[in-house]
Length: 299
Image (cartoon, rainbow, N blue to C red; front, top):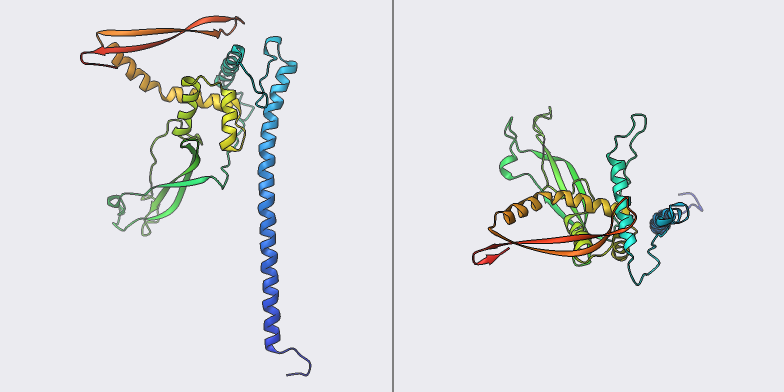
């Protein structure tokens, strides 16, 4: 050993100290990254809410006279005016007519924005593995193994508590057969609204508060702002209500068939005031309820 050179023990201590410094620097950088991600998420939520408010302000300033009333989630109302429901129906019909028109060939359809689920929401995983009797390969008999995982996420609601359901599907393939003919992907149960990030419980909450409790959509936006911690646009909620109504059409036909099969039918009509599109004034509408009578019980 040369005179004055550090010993192996001193070098080991210096290396350990350097490792601790690097680990401390890495943990500090991870904390800064997490804080920046939280700031970015908050800014995105504020940007979405500002875009929604800007649309309301443009309609209030440059729209027609009868359409210049634009409700804001920050403004509390003592009474809900009837004109808001009419405007919402008119806007929804206009949006449906626009979506039904075929897009021009020269323009590409804009991609739907992807909804990101926060990590602090509760996640519940549901797996759909292949049954044991279907695991053997249909070609050589060897047991198929998982080669790919498909995860589909949707928002569910349980007593004003939000959680994210992760549906995991697996793709099985045979290790002995390399042509890909024995690949099988498990299926998940059909949904009420396919390709939607919102599950049946969330849709049931929207329908119940809209039609049972008579809560306008813009009030539902305010209620969802608390548990969701983000602002959902009115067009999104109206689209979910419309697609849910289409999904419930078979159930409506079945109930109607059973009611009309009865010998005696009870009917009850309730008058409601509503705006008729194209007239600009309120008319009298009717909500009718029907009940069939059968010997010994009623439906």
